[in-house]
Length: 361
Image (cartoon, rainbow, N blue to C red; front, side, top):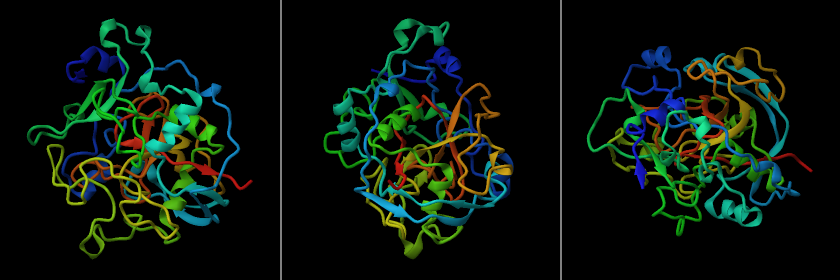
């Protein structure tokens, strides 16, 4: 059963949904002035209120670097002048670490669930006390699913293409009638920050800091327009899974995919890392503040001590990186190098996943 968010007015209000400002077709200067990141990822989708936590019940694993790449660490230029919350560009040094060569897959997450009986936030009941005025029969577990509109629409209301789908979760990406059978090699989605942290703990790993993520994404090539270089389509080929066509009604699928792609579908960077740009957004460990770069430390920054988003002041948010299959120059340009995403910590969607890092033992 599928519920439209627009028809869920009470629930949406209670979930503190925020609207956009980085979407419509604008000049680069207008985007720089207007961009507030409000709809690039979790904003414009339903925030989940605090759920019963079970991450603490997960036993920490020993850690295994199989399938990971050693990043030697070093100094780099972090951020992007094009985005207000990614300024100023500043020099950062990070220590060495291992990082997953690809996003965590459905098969890997399934192994975690089988071993721990973990229930993701999207699968847990919602507490009526968190949503006053919303009928109890509407408070059903689920998650946000991108749904193309039947025709071109104004980009001023993301709720036109985001549906809160009852029964959508990591094992049922589009809802109860869908499954991950045959998609074992796709990135797991509909994972909240809590879910990603629980998996990382079980695997004996952790989520990357924002600085670690960006250093790895640059691939040792320095700061460019995109993590792969300065041309959108080098050699006339798409090298990342993003959106082509008319957003949000018609994806022309020039890169071969309407939604998420299997891991390793596009070339790796020079470190051997896949999908550091596009495909699905990836959780980082850092709390989000738009002003953090103005005072972040030069060595191994780990994010601010508290979270603050002027678009949704009461929500606790963490940084997300890399963009997704919904990013394009028509809508969300946050797939560009140095840009930042953000998400309320209990929220998930079908364009949000993660990868892990691990310190040297």
